[in-house]
Image (cartoon, rainbow, N blue to C red; front, side, top):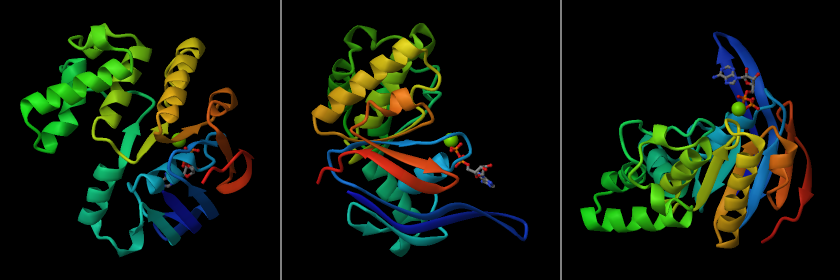
Length: 227
Ligand code: ADP
Ligand code: MG
């Protein structure tokens, strides 16, 4: 599904080079649930940006669903991103004046689906994440955990190859965070490929494989890589 080979990433502050990722090698197969665990500043978001095609490596090779990212221009990269990746963020990023249903429908509007098709798909996925009774609510009428479920439904409604989540429980209390992790486990059991970034080892352990990152190096892995 995705392969990072000898990836290095630096940021530049004027003339000064700030090396962040060092020789990162990682393969994730279809159907895996992998977490990337590391402390603040270790390079997790930098890695997520590359995995999600929001940024490109300074050197090394990144393959996503058979596409060599090196060969793509900005527009092609955006197309791959929209097709392959469903993003979930710490702070949900829902549109405040739209209902749960409208938020989930939105990515389908951009794809030109008909009203009835959009409604049908958005409702089905909201039911799947346990929000059948909450579709007409605005985000501020929902709890944090419910808002994150809406965001997860929105990420999945386009049927991406990978659900990519950056600190998805970061804004939630422990119990609600654990419930969101149970949902991730269920979605993974349904065959979804999930890549999750977190600094919290308890959260990371819900994944089937944990990859540790420290100062931009992948240091160890626990759990099984499943082909
Ligand atoms: P994490 O998500 O693990 O907290 P990040 O990937 O956000 O780590 O950041 C890793 C390091 O890179 C940090 O030292 C951060 O200050 C630095 N960094 C992140 N983004 C930029 C940027 N756009 N320009 C310069 N430095 C950056
Ligand atoms: Mg981060």
